[in-house]
Image (tube, rainbow, N blue to C red; front, side, top):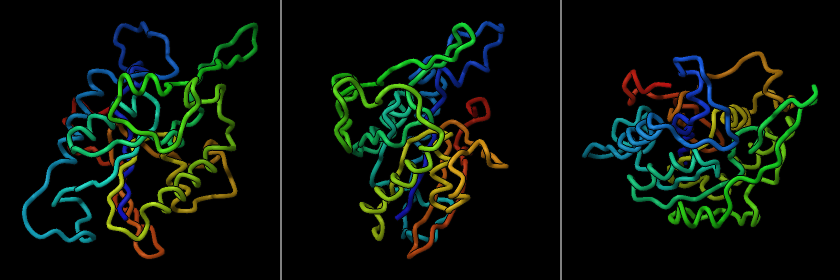
Length: 249
């Protein structure tokens, strides 16, 4: 199995730092892609679809010079991820499966301070009716609640690492030992936890904020991991060389 972790394209929240006039629109709990984010996803899809003729060696192509030939695409149910994954799935003519567990750290919420007290919004994200209307090609790996996939509130800091370990086990149960090439469109924060789960980095410390390092993960960047026998090989991280300079964010 080869596993490709892909960060979504630039969202409206991501773009706040690019505002030139100093006037920042409010953050939203479930942002969509910007025009730049859509273009990033389109170029990513073209890159993933590219291939070269000739004999392919499944394992001896560490830079995917011969192509990717993805077989499965999973996506977070946050809108920026669904949009990105939909563009890829459409370009590759592959089914798209929504996997709620690969959402960004914290879930769907906004924080506000009222009378010096932090208040957390109670939201639920997209529901099946929304998905059937806007993303009819997407199927769900597991049923979601009628109100939406997110139960409301903010995820506790002790949970993302456990969630990452659960996602890894779920993927292994379905694809380990095969020649499947699996892509998961997810988020920068959760990627850190997936990496830690795969490489067993500081499993006793569940909170990423307490670690002495952090990883840069650009919008629409790709990281590749090969599962060979009982080993996980980190082939590359944060690959975005297919994007022109003005689209790197």
